[in-house]
Image (cartoon, rainbow, N blue to C red; front, side, top):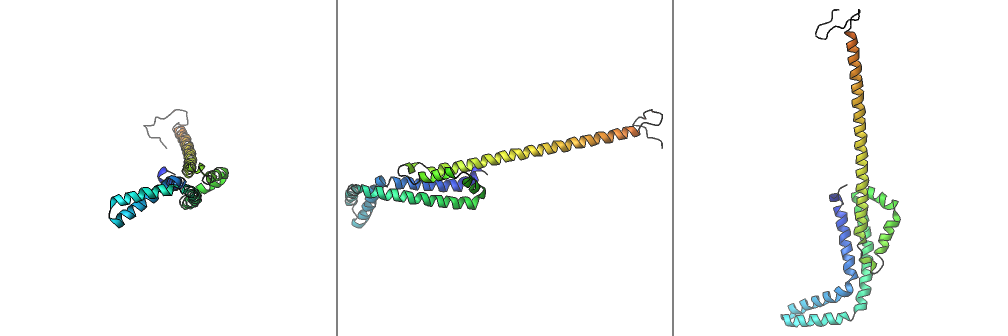
Length: 197
């Protein structure tokens, strides 16, 4: 597992966190967006920038009176986006890496807490989707690094064992060969001279 493979899930969680953040601040952004939209529409309809800007400022001011509406709408939208984000993220994780789903269900308290944060007003400005997804992938990478290190250690041990066995066999063959070079009277025949049969 690499960060490049984790990038799609992290990007999706970041996008949903940004959308939740925008929904939480709809009380501030709502009147501005409404004023800008009205200003643009009136400017293009009348052909006068001054009239468009004046109507936009008036609309922004009047829509600020509807602040309770924007607060309620932003809170509800933020909750819906949070739940939708969790479902989309779970779907992406299932498609890309099923092993992560097992880890998610091994530690459900952490993920339920993270999901709960997305549902609590003003706490849901914390990017809990991105934080929990990053933590999940980091744990997976740590496990895979440990498994790779264990595998390499086992391979090195096995290679060392094979090398030792080969060295032992070579020593045994050498000893047997040297034993054959000794004649019956106990004199050693030099290796350069051929042995008489």
